[in-house]
Amino acid sequence: MSVVALVPAAGRGVRLGLGRPKALVPVNGQSLLLRAVRGLLAAGCVQHVVVAAPPDQVDVVAAELAEVPDAHVVPGGAERTDSVRLALDSVERVAPDARVVLVHDAARAFTPASVVQDVVRAVEQGAPAVVPVLPVSDTVKKVDEAGNVVATVDRAELRAVQTPQGFTLDVLREAYAAADGVATDDAGLVERIGGTVHTVAGHPHALKITTAFDLAIAESVLAVDIP
Ligand code: C5P
Image (spheres, rainbow, N blue to C red):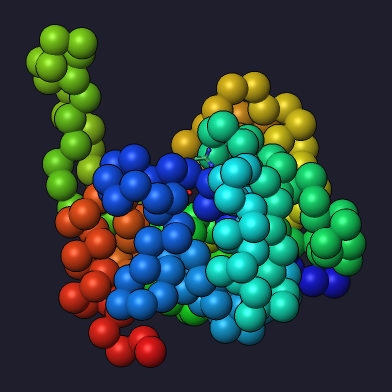
């Protein structure tokens, strides 16, 4: 039985503003995507990776991953949820013996191996769905349409959620079969079908690179010791 990781990488990278898909943006010479895929496989507990690429750039993404034999590329969709669904549909073909599935954003290219290992271990030990989380250090407020504060949420109860998120293959398939509309994370779809989502400790280095500021952090702090 194997573990397969789905990597949605079909975003256009509009917020980064570099005119190309975010996954293909290089950080100290190596793209976010290549770093993310290598990181998953280097954790030692993931055997296959399926990458959802922008539909018009499947060849470019496949060329980017040519040196990674366990990586497969499929066309992604209009929303992240569509991209994950398309990657999930390919699992039977790419990794027929998979029972555990991870979903990992290419944009979280610096996720430490220990987070990947902890997520896989928790699923293998019986959790149907697992997310890595961090405590929230900012105070979080709810606002109305006018921008006025309506409530202050107790931050002790809040967690910021990262990826990879881990699932039994059966549970993720069931969640996607029931899904209508889009979700910002995959565990949210499991919650909607009444499934329990467990947590493990996330890591600050698993930040999602979204803006030029995040990219600068990655270049100056995270990628310095990676050839
Ligand atoms: O836009 P955001 O940063 O939240 O996207 C998270 C991940 O989902 C990124 O790795 C992005 O490439 C991916 N994505 C996708 N298909 C889309 C939109 C986003 O695979 N249509």
